[in-house]
Length: 199
Image 1 (spheres, rainbow, N blue to C red):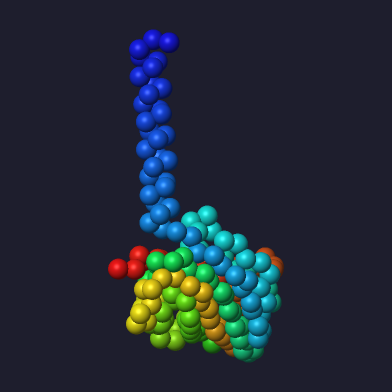
Image 2: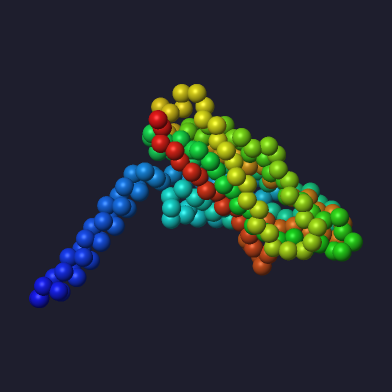
């Protein structure tokens, strides 16, 4: 092996070493959340749930959550979370995907949602009720950004918490709305959590 080849190998080894160190630091700064079973009730059920590779996100695949031709359908989602010790949740992003089909003479559809957090390191959700109205046929992606206010004394570290989401899908005559991955009008609900180290 000549000096040039040795130098290339040394450079690769150094880069790999730095990457491993950076990954370890990143893992320490941004630990993973453990998610329990997501449960859907009311007018929906959970077909599947897929944790994200980042350790802080979860995709929830809904089944049978839709409203047709004047129907109003509710979906109550509950997700257990286990926050690592020494961390609290700072913000939560929730992305809804689905489709709506609206006749030209229809008044359209809407998707309403409210949030509740309890226990563990989830604190209190600072998010007023939200409703998105749709007046044309399209695939949609609606994201809510929820600020979390830490409860007093919460930074003793981590714990188990429960995230609650109440959804209402409303249709009018000649319209339909789906938040449902069970058919071709696919969509889902994705949760993403930002963690903050306790001071």
